Length: 172
Image 1 (cartoon, helix red, strand yellow):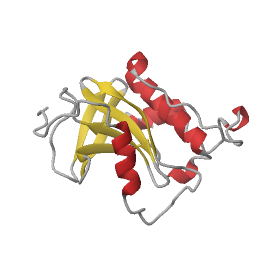
Image 2: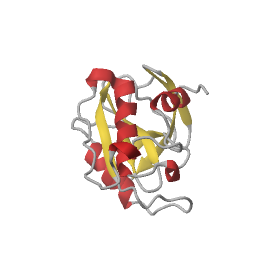
Image 3: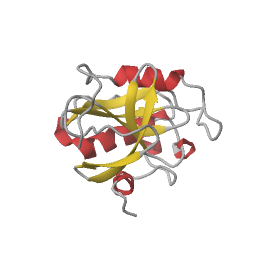
Image 4: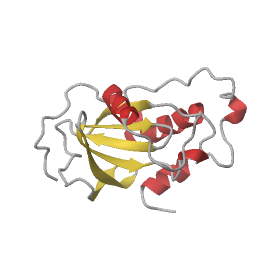
């Protein structure tokens, strides 16, 4: 893999990622008004930055250059497969005026399948633990919401951790 020709992020870019995704115009399509913008679990993985961004319109795994060996420069719109501990993940290259080049992979087909913000954060934390294991630097605490009780942890529409990680690895 080629190394990034732009300066790598030295500091955790999680807050910047959330801010940049939230400042975008909401795309037409399915929105989940129960979700807000946040980043989850941004940590160094093989020297580069990996984390999850949650918005009312998407939930993506995001890869940013950190000077490591996961990042590889590709043109905007092109896809590349990155080998992670649980299998290869297809990332698509994009660019943001503030964030610069980044690569992302959708984690759910539609955010409408997520029952609430607590479920989205739980899933993001599970994904990051599955990818990074004990190397994950921070787990985002669940928001104090009335509908975020233990009874709402799993619903038929909420993707399971195993199913999600199998989907990321390209398995059904």
